[in-house]
Length: 503
Image 1: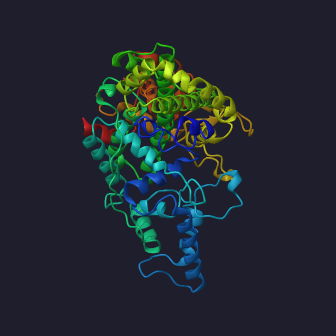
Image 2: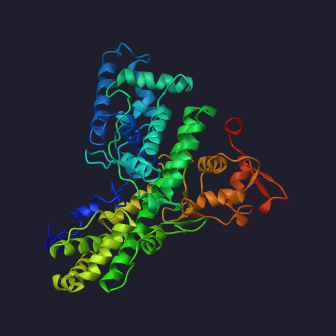
Image 3: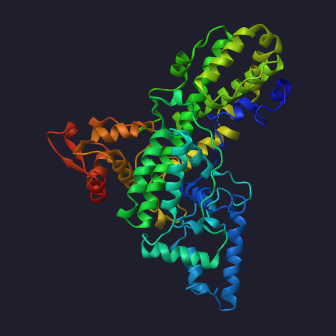
């Protein structure tokens, strides 16, 4: 690959120094629902061999096998249910609501309540080229952990929590055993995560970012498992994963945009000259991308567009440096960005002669629709954010209330109504529990506001008493009104028994 080839096909191949960066958006997000992400997490944690590529065909094969048993009035030896009852279990009891554009399609889509259900359900596409959403969550665990050992420990704890054991409720144990009888392979067993990218420890020090907050909250959610049924617990886990995944992707967009600003300034002889200055410039101290009650998607679109422009700029610069004989290290840290800035400043004349500005201008003009998120990568990011955060719009109106772990809701009933930031009841429960984890004594709603800010979601604690969030907290019994507390509201732990054990 050369700068000339990059000019022809700017999205096809990235420079190795960019592609191998810990801060690269890998895997690139596409459409996914909350249940698609959870199913993919199962496959990455403990279902080796059940890849995104194999899931749609396994679903079709299972449907055919169940029909074969129905025609012969038989069942597998290890199964407790007959074929008709198991068919009803898949297509009625466990069936996850389809979207309006899926209502006429026949495929297996079930709630990822137990691991074995993810063998044949929950891929992003019905074809064999779905993106691995679970790999994004795994990458978040490593990027948010202090070191590789801590990340591996968290990943193992997630595997243990997702496993169905004697501590799970009887329905979960029955369901796992029954699905195993009909679809036994691959069996549930820990999958080796392999080598994963991590942030530079010096860059991470003192930095609050979504992946770091997610790792802490993941531990809090795992600790709460014994306090509820498996369905309730997986709903809480799903709600945290949804908000964290989109916040992480949006944070990466910001980091990309700020990194490109540094290197673009170096083309003019400026830009950070030392690592501390680069850290301040690259990593946002106050990350904000959602404002409670306001429209959400326009802000995400602006960040996705800035990310795409930065991706073009970073790769063009790296290819141009390679053209003048300079190999760059992976752009995984502020120190690496400073090195690139130094090379750019030292070789400004050679880069100008290589035509880097002309290449950037030409590619940006030619790729306007992609940069505006109307197609390609930007459109995929918007699909990802909208479907992961937004309340599911079920084709069957009876199932409209199925999704309660959302972070975006429709402002009205019309299809054209905007998506605004508003937490569902399950999201509120999960976030209140995580915000109070490890605390002693009462805490005001300001703590919940601060916790949300860790994910880039901004709500003024003084407004909670009168807005939709305050109403949700009261309806769920999660606050006590107190004139002595800030804003008059004290948070109540949703799972007090587990909270007391932890103290």
